[in-house]
Length: 160
Ligand code: SF4
Image (cartoon, rainbow, N blue to C red; front, side, top):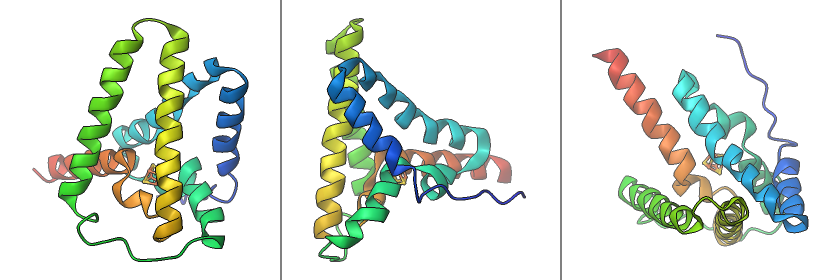
């Protein structure tokens, strides 16, 4: 299989650009759908967790910068479990779904919902990176977990 080059050294720029543009004009918040959709799209195309390993802007940000400020504790065992990951995924999907329903068909409100979602999850990921290992968020990230589930389902399907 062709080896894919990692872009994790620079893709954090995309995350910073997203936040700057969205602060300047909230309509750019809609671009958050690309951020959420790309790992799922790649996983559905059979590429597994390639987004996490090679492209993810947030993973890139956490990996490149949090190493300078982290306390570097290990993530508590209770958090690092499939049950916890499932809980986070269901919680985030529910909150996101309700927020989108409340936004209706209003473009600006949808963009604001997306921006808020990205902002809150980024703040949580940074705080986790400070108190625990830099990329601790990746242990419970809903998108990372969803892509792992897609990969697992595809592998099981291929076996049967
Ligand atoms: S687990 Fe989430 S934050 Fe981490 S690299 Fe994957 S998609 Fe990005």
